Length: 400
Image (cartoon, rainbow, N blue to C red; front, side):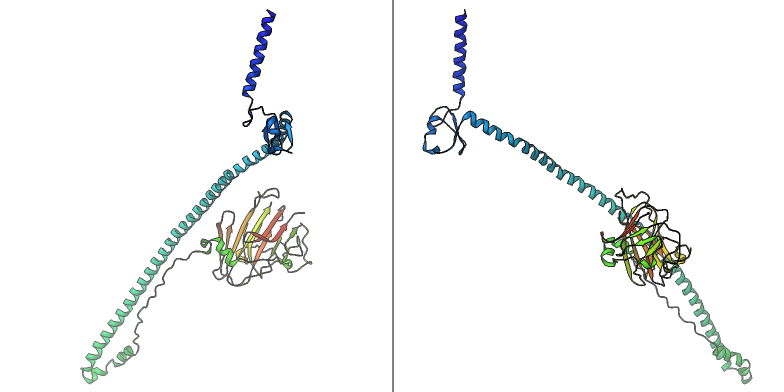
């Protein structure tokens, strides 16, 4: 029984060995087992290939040793390949993220354009109603004037006809009758006044858009001003740096001997440049926490009294509130001011959504100065005067 078991085991071993030999790749030229690797050509060789001229003087390694060496080399590729695969996955996400970003930007622009078109539509409806009302008023006034002129001419014609009849009749009367009442006839003739024919002159209405309907970019490129702060007008609590780009806000007891021309009661400063003609545009960015005022004031606006900075006193300003802006927050308040001196307008715009905010309308007779002011209760506030979205002047107001 044991002998039979040994025979079966030998047969299985021989069959397995024969099967391995049948599956083992053979040299195509010599039909022998491949037992070597040429390191130079990375080609598998049989014993007969070893002595051929094709691989003379080439470094040869046994299969096991060559496999171990190349396995180690291949394993060294795994880590960088995995890293590159992750990078490739991340790069694949970039177009997707870019596509989403483009989609968001397009949606924002569509919303802005829709808002601008809505505003223009509202302006046109309002403008049409105003023009229509003016035309009706002018038509009514002209009709009344023409009617009154016609009545005057008609009365004058009646007077002429009556006088003509009277004179003609007198000419054919007796001498005594001709002279009777002749003085009245002469007076009537001498005092004749021919009424002027009413000459109407219609004023043709035309559609004129305010500057902001032509786009902020146009105003930026055409009327942009590069402002500098005036240290001579600086409130005692404001300290301007030498380059006039920074100012620090420090609450101090008011005193009036440092600089008489400066603002004494309101923490304020205005620019060195003033304007008494044409159009001017400047931009302001605000970061921080607090309340401030932006606008223009007359050059002669009192800086050493408690006069309220209101239009009646020569100061046109708005209060862009910035309570949610903190030094840790990236939110920026962007405001643009447009002065049309001849038209008598100071307009304010939000650059964040490129929208119109408010316009003061008045008659300007003096030089106007760009005006910047803050509330004493404000904390850290930074105001930047910018040129076409690029910082050129920096005004920092920091509560110490």
